Length: 283
Length: 160
View 1 (spheres, each protein chain N blue to C red):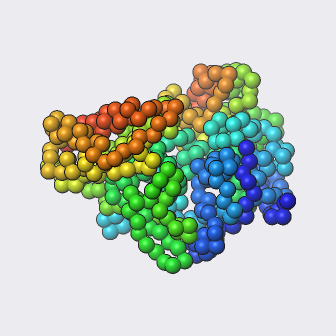
View 2: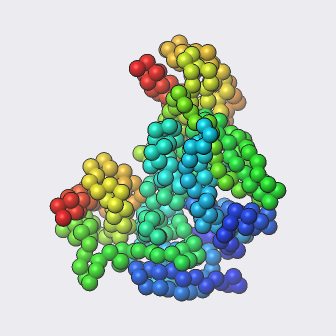
View 3: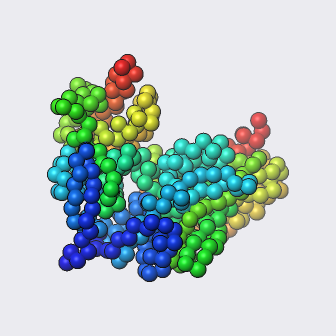
């Protein structure tokens, strides 16, 4: 399996990268998803713009109450980050459950979001955190909520010349979060995954997102609404889980699991998340 | 057809290789066909089996999931780079000692991945060894002996 021929540019700066993208280029970041689709000839970009040399796009920092993660930050570095393991353990957990060590050393956070596969490991966590992607193009810089990045199976709302330079979210002080997945084996591709972030008791804000139940990773707003104002007792947990399906879902149907099984798994994973947080908040 | 050949320089196990390549050439193909270092194996060609595991500037990755042109100006270490003056590294010796292979096809990748594992975690438990080798498949199923070999190499380096 070899990719179709393409032109290659190694970007020396963000400006150079976005100029090449405006000229019809496609971003090559970690390449762990893109190269696979290119070998299968599902993707045939005619110009790859390699951003791996842009070390200014990699790194994890806490700035003015926000956590900022460079778009090129490797999934392995997210899994190992002391800051994230302490402040946002759900994100570090989701990162450590992704694929294998070799792939995690190449794969990037922006790549995971922008490949827009509904089974992406990090995307539900980013959505539950209300994360925003910072986009740069020749026109300038803008911000887009993570939940608006994927629009269809492996398709994003990004313009072809937009580069995700960073991903940022409020430092979840006093909040608790969780990531749960069902996969065929440890570190396998998730069949269904769920992430939840809540703050306050009773809950003031809830973010809930799920993968594998629709062509994209989606927020579950019905579940979020059911959680606000509640304390995490059994009736509140049961009521929240009952709201899965408020949104028109279209669970994937493939050899791994039929739609009904995925819905059932999502309920179980969400329950595990809620029970984990309930146990944590009662200590 | 090859209108867009690009001159690249890649140092593999200390030897510099300069060659004009198509941008689509995979790093594993450069290592095997250009540098003739055929210890790095191609199994699935799709980032699953780990047979092509090498180090690029110290990061252990799958060389079928990277383009050769991305390794321009980089230092690559393959299985051939682990022994010195015909003397096996501790990990290679442990694999041999334990008979941690049957056909041997996965062995170079297993050893490269184990090397990264032990660098990050010098005394892993069995669960951590299994996790560290998630990206490498052995179709003969010698996993148990591979785990023993890694455990032994870890213990040997602790003694040293």
